[in-house]
Length: 112
Image (cartoon, rainbow, N blue to C red; front, top):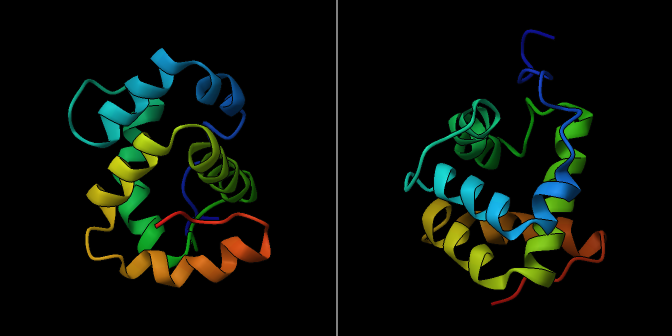
């Protein structure tokens, strides 16, 4: 499992973070380079771009599920945060195109 990201944070309560605006914004500031990072936030920030570019190939099953949960939640409930993330990590929209079909297959509609 050397080719996987650490599973140290796989048990984190993702729902609690997503549903707590203060916590969510703190994580977003971290990954966007606008604020301090918790150890798990730093782990996310360090690997997010690579995970995006490789289709999450080093992700554990829990991390893949977490990514799907997070994307779906942000699109449905925190569109401004979603837009800020996509502008930062996918300014040209090339990853969006790659993942759109995958998202649709899971019932997630990625907004324009």
